[in-house]
Length: 175
Ligand SMILES: Cc1cc2nc3c(=O)[nH]c(=O)nc-3n(C[C@H](O)[C@H](O)[C@H](O)COP(=O)(O)O)c2cc1C
Picture 1 (tube, rainbow, N blue to C red):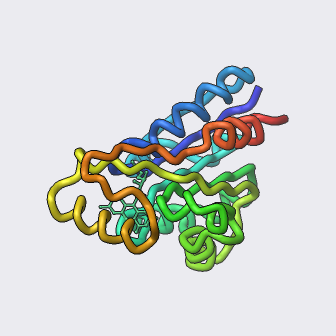
Picture 2 (cartoon, rainbow, N blue to C red; picture 1 turned 60 degrees about the horizontal axis):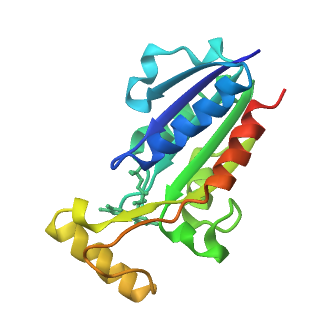
């Protein structure tokens, strides 16, 4: 048994849903798991955990600033243990942009923090037009028009590959 800290940064809840799945898999493997919003990271001492997982979604080209700050500030602690990072974004629905090596947000994030966590993943996100306000809905629709994605204002599409999430969950849960 080992201990796992999972920290998430989400706006519409998909990253949290992915983290809950990872939590389930790690707990199922017999590990002790704590799941928390990265904004509450100060409540949990990462050095008390064997594994730290950080997951964050993209909004208008960026993860929340706190995500990179956390990874930079805690570099020594995180590098001394198993550390996994994953990003969630809609660009990753494209096969050519869904790996750590090819996803532009992952690449920029790693460059920005200046080190590489031991496990990385890129998950395709969700479009939920009815949930967005007028401006967000239409800006995203326009981007989708340009990149050949769904533009129906009623569309709700989850592009996430849950098999891939499960495989990542097993990887972070392995001994
Ligand atoms: C206002 C808004 C802006 C977004 N900007 C981007 C973006 O710049 N690039 C991208 O790939 N996905 C973008 N997305 C898609 C989100 O990353 C995707 O919906 C993801 O599932 C959100 O995860 P969350 O629910 O955990 O916040 C955006 C979504 C919204 C609603």
